[in-house]
Length: 486
Image 1 (cartoon, rainbow, N blue to C red):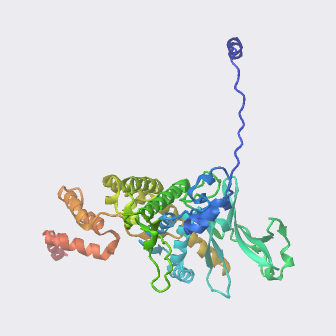
Image 2: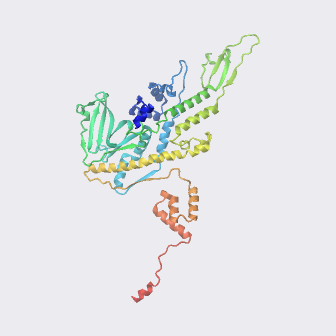
Image 3: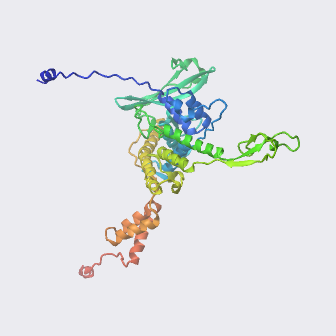
């Protein structure tokens, strides 16, 4: 029936449309670009974008080349690297303890030996900047008697999946053997560790041909656990199974910010006082008489031909250009706002919001830092627990012990952007006066993790005593009568 109606109305099915889009950068190249932005070296940015040829990159500020005989001063604000470093500190500075229900001393020794706090900072900063990474566990008795924990960045690790489940983590290390560059790969799976070697063309070569690699033998893992922990804060929409950098979708914004700031500084330089000096009045060396060359900073002048006519007066004239501060400031604020949007608030970076166009709106965006922090910590706390469990399992396997997964781990943190003590007192006192909070709840909410449980219990007792509430044993009326009868 439907076909008959379609034929009657002469409705034709649309032709299929096939579109092919060439992807400019691979995952490793994308990681390299993120690393360049994180490092923040202007010469590296200029060289990187100058080598891209996709029809769009040539329009970027960092790929622009000056006209012959002219100069372009390119200034990098350093904002991408600053964002990552500040967010790393925001996420980790309030981490003050990791509590295990069992084997606390053993983990403390492993953490101390591996400088776990510094390792976590490296993990967070590199994962935010590059996209992902993984913790690798190994053992070398010549270095330490404890399991060795290392963090590998995104460009030094690969992930293999089977039906959506992680089955293998490949750690890559560059090695120079016989004056040639090779990639040494360590394949970590649940059943063991194997090794392979690839040349610069990506072809696998025989490891037996190199005596330097004779110590690397396949290792079987009877405990059946993966001695590696992947780290991904945000899954990538571009590369399935990999992580996404915090710089993703912000490259053009960072480029625009650098362009606006560079133009602003150029306007300041061009707007400096200029002197128009007749040639006879040019500054010269008092000893040699040589004319002093013009300089952009301390001796900028424009030469005028002296007027030798009758009655002519040759004099030095001074002018100064007009700088469009308001227009430049508006452009800078817009570019900066787009760079920070959805990542971090200006005040977290120490930017004075009073100088921005709308201070109230900028203060409201302070919550952005809290959202980003909570997103990172929701993943990081689970990763910390996985690292601890894996480290203890690895230690048990080395000693031929049975592994134990039933260990409760608590990651204790302080508060970030919490209300002031005065604001908390005001809020809690109102709730207590309304009769909806007990004394115990008030003390617990007010002091949180700043005080231990014994101190809180003593404080509750003191408050109740001051209020005239005294806890006493229940009176035993008539017990002495029954005692006499007995």
